[in-house]
Length: 209
Image 1 (cartoon, rainbow, N blue to C red):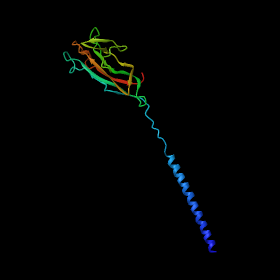
Image 2: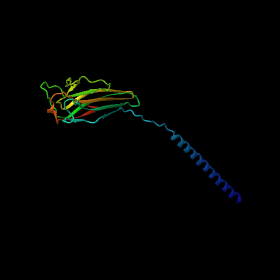
Image 3: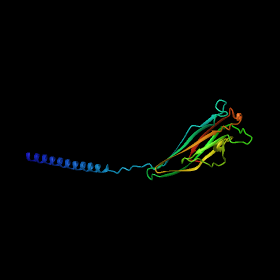
Image 4: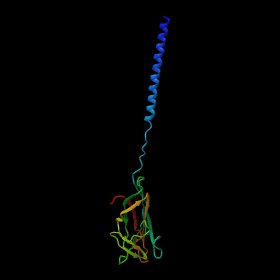
C-alpha cells in the first residue's frame, strides 16, 4: 500500500514538473516572439513642400497743406516695401515660384495745375536687384522738377508693378521691392492741390488679379 502511494506521488510530481517545463518553454517562446516583433524600422517623413510667403509695408498716405508745401519747401514723398520669401523643400533644396505685385491707389484727388499738364505725382520703383524700374505697362516715365518717375498725377486703381516675377531658392531666397510716391514741388502756383489727398497700398500675391 505504501509503495502504491509513493508511485502515485511520484507520478503527480512528474506531471507537475512536465507542465512547468512546457509552460516555461511556451512563455520563453512568446517572450522571444514579442522581442522580435517590436524591432521595426521607423520611417521619418521629411517636409517636401515649398513655402512662398509675402510681407508688405505700411500704406502710403499724405496730403498737401499750406504748412507742409509751398514755394521753396521741397517735394513731399512716401514709400513702402513688398517682400517675397521662398523656402525650398528639404528633399530637393531647390524651388522656383512666381508672384505679382500691384499698387492699389484707393484715393487720389490731385490734379494737374499747369497748362502743359506737367507731372506732379511720380511713382518710382526699385526692384530686388537694386535697379530702378524703367518700364510699367500703361504708364509713362518722365522727368519733372529734377525727379524721374512714372506720371500718376491723376491715376487711381490698380497698377501692375511686377507681372509673374520669378523667384528661385536654393534653399531660401528673399526679394524686396521698394515703391516711392513723390509729389513734386514745381515752384509754380500749385494751390489747386492744397487740401488734396493720396492713399495707396501694395498688394503682393501668388496669383494675378
